[in-house]
Structure formats: structure tokens, C-alpha cells
Image (cartoon, rainbow, N blue to C red; front, side):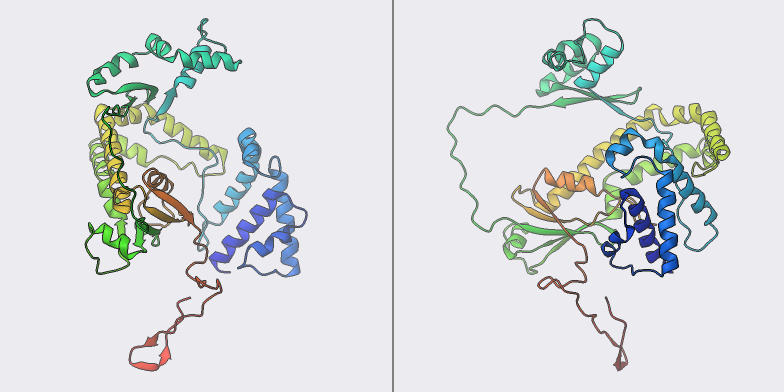
Length: 420
């Protein structure tokens, strides 16, 4: 059986077990690539679904059940991981996974706002903090949040350095226990007392229409202009020779502009100067195991070298490198949004809703997907476009198109295989 059909049947069985329906074959029409199997195969799949449901927690599986009782689904994950380990010697073996979340050696940041500060002070047993049980107490704390921040933190004094630039503290910090980022806010300039004449509205049809779609994840994005007037506007009003101009950013360009490549090079250079620590981190046993004894080996090794790893990745140069990478990433987002929208908030972007993951293709570097869509929504008008079977169906009648015959060179009578 082809790997694609195996993956489809696996998704079918997991969905049937998670939805807890009476007849699992009611889901079969949703999977257009699957056909009804033989009778003995149907009986085995039904038995497999019942076995999975006995190992699962509350059914059907929902976000609420996963949030309240996540440990109740561990037996089912353990069974799946055990089967995956036994199939590692077969062709197209499934990828292993860890049943418990794993953190990296880099320090993790937490965000502290006025709401979280209220909870921290209350948990510390400070008597004069308003009660958390009543909404009135929380509202009272927010009304006097500046005095609370000034009393128990030094953020107010730190933010006074930025008063010359008219920035003020926004009552939110982000810290990893060593460094801290303070959120500042710069209000808009006050409106002038002089009467300003409003600019004339833009002429009709001035909005630019862009279609953005992925290109097999080899490029970060590809956008196509669907208007001659919009294409001219991208050239500063000059006549554009090509009606459908495309804009694209490659993955390598994103890695360079966002500072990811520079950060990886520096991190590899610094860890290479500590061969003992580099060897210890490289020899860490995998956590993607079903055996508790093997997982304990992973925990012991991590705990043995945690202090040295945190001292290395938490030093000043790593924190400065991380801050520099954050600035470069924001600049890269701004450049991409300006390239697509042209600095015009009236630009309309039809964003392909293909649900690509950040690293769905092996060998390609991870790139932003959801975050890019969110950043674009801040500077122009973005609409999701369903891309399901768009390369196979006709855009007018929505029916499947025939394959395109390609004549072979040197033999006009024969044709190559169809494209679809």
C-alpha cells in the first residue's frame, strides 16, 4: 500500500476513535481517496477503533477534555509510540515522538502583566492586595496599577529614561529571570489646532488586489498582482509591461534578513569552543521512547548537564544575540509587508489558506506561516482563500480538468504522462 493511503487510513481510524460515533463508516465519504475495504479489513479496523477508545480519556476528544484531563490520553499515546518503535526497520517508517513536552537548553521567557502581577502579589500573601475572588478587587487593582508597579518593581524608574522620547510604561514586562524587556508605548502626536483640509478620496479601482500562495514551501511566499492599474502603482505610476507581476521571497532570503542564519553561525561557533559541553549535549539520549527506563536515562543526562548548559546559553552574549535576532526579525516582517502592500493600507491580499506548517518539507528551513498572516493583517486587508484542489478543478465550473498532453521531443506521435 502506498504511504499516502496508509496516512489517510491512519487519520480515518484516529478520527473515528476520537469522535466516538456509532458507525465509523459514516466518516468514509469525507476521505475521497479511500474506498470501502474488504469485510475482514473492516472488522479489524472496527476492533482497532474500540481498542483505542478503551485507552483514551473522555470522549469525544475536545479542546476542553484535553485541557482538563491531558494525562488520561497517555495510555493511547504509549500504544501508538510502541507500534511506531516496532516499525522503525520498515521502509517509510513513521516518525517517533515524545509523549511529554521537552524544553530546550535556552532560557524561556514569561510575560508579566498587571493581571499576573496581581496574582503573584496575592500568592505571596501581601495583605493589602485586593481579593482575587471578586471582580471588584481586580478592577480596583487595575485602576491603581501604576502605584503597585512602582511599589514592588523598578520598571517605573527604568522607564523614566525614555521620557525624552515621549514614551511611557505600558505595565507589561517579559523576562527570563536574567534579562528583562519592558513594554513602552509612544502616544500619537496631538492634533494641530489649525484646520487641515482632508485629502481627496482615492479614485475607484485604486485598491490593489494580490493573490498570495505558497510554492511547495521552497519560497516563503509568492504574490501575484491581478490588476493592470495595481501593477502600475507598484512601479510608482509608470506603465508596467507585465500585467501579472509576481513578488516572492525565498526561504534563504528570509533566513538572512531575519538574522536566523547569523544567530545559528554564532551559536555554533561559541559552542565549538566548549568541546566537553558540545559532546555532552550531542550525546543526550532521545526522549522519543516508550520505555520508562530509557526515558529516565534521558532525564538523568539532562539534569547532569543542565547547570552548564544554562550557564552557557544564558550568558550576556547569547542574550544580546537573541535581542539582535528579535530586532532583525521584526525588520524582516516590516520589509515583507511593505513589499506586498506597497505601503498602502487599502491593498487587498487573498491569502492562500493551505495550512502549511513551519517545517512541513524535510530539508527546507522553517519559515513563518501564521505569524506572517497576522503581520499582514495589521497593514492591509487580508482574506483567507481556500486552496483545496484548486490546481485540479476548473475555476469556472469547479469540475476536474483533464490532464495536459505533452508531446515528446523527437517523437510527435507519443505524449508524456499527464500533469494531473
